[in-house]
View 1 (cartoon, rainbow, N blue to C red):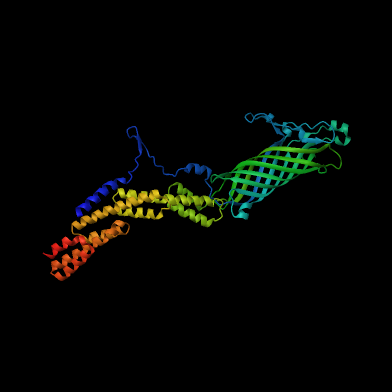
View 2: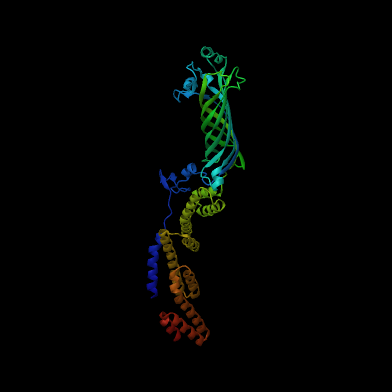
Length: 477
């Protein structure tokens, strides 16, 4: 019986022991002079995520108290090719000025088109964040004041105009000086910590004076009013990304279209009854803002892509606790689910490494821990069960060897340990316990306590009838 059991153990172990995966060896080239490790230290998709979702768990920007823009631009239309910029690239658009009479239009040359402008955005707040407690993109809304003027106005054809109406014959320059009051919305896209893209749209009211005799003073009795719309796109560089209140500098390209459709001309000094300004400009910007810092969620994702799934999961859970309404909460939940899936594999790999170093008990602890964390994954569950079963059979084989060497207590202790994690140990507990009792009987018999010895033999035989021949041989000594 014993020999048959030993043979079965050996057959099982010889078949199962080889099922542990071999370590993946690096690929070699040029007779081993060049080696490439095919196992990456980073999770798949790490670089793509760095570019597209590098700050998806950052806190929203909640306030931009002020942003200042100063730049130059031209009124008119573009012409020619963007690859060949010269003075002909900006041209006058005479159709933008309308007159009461059929008079000669104002002729604006290249230098008459250019002007400067300053804009101030104030009180930009993240309305979606304050209303909903979340903000997928930083959408900042506030007020804008803008002032602009042309640098060198074009002289009106006063002599020709005087032939139509004498009041129109003053020597003046057409040089619009604007004031605009607008509602502004910024859209920010920030892939990295030190810079972000900024897109803005503004709409509001505009007022203008546009006649000047000397480019220093404007005729305040001749005014115009209308509406203005503007859009821009640019880049912002954060000067001090580690502080609570931070500053940015940047550059914007801006396009605006202003319609001065109402002209107040009580003295009737101009034939102009409306004009539109189509403006293209380049602006230097300076701003301050609050919020937008990275959170523990960003730390968690960094750990995840470095395959530290256990600590990543803990930090993702902390992120959900700190930011329960964050726009990318669902993404954090997906990462947690993925960590839950991958953590057992990571722990199992640790067990395999210990196994290969013959640290079987420590390897078993990792396998059992990994098994306790498995969720709906039959593949790894079967793999872990198979290896745990192998270890149980190995130790049961060792326990059988101990029985042959009359080391009954050691054998029983080992089987009790196996019984804690395997059915193989549980099924054999009573049998191995019977050998311990038999051993106690032998000690009593050797010491001359025959009655006690016979009692132990009877107990052992009751637990394990297979001991009948062993007991009988002892009883007739």
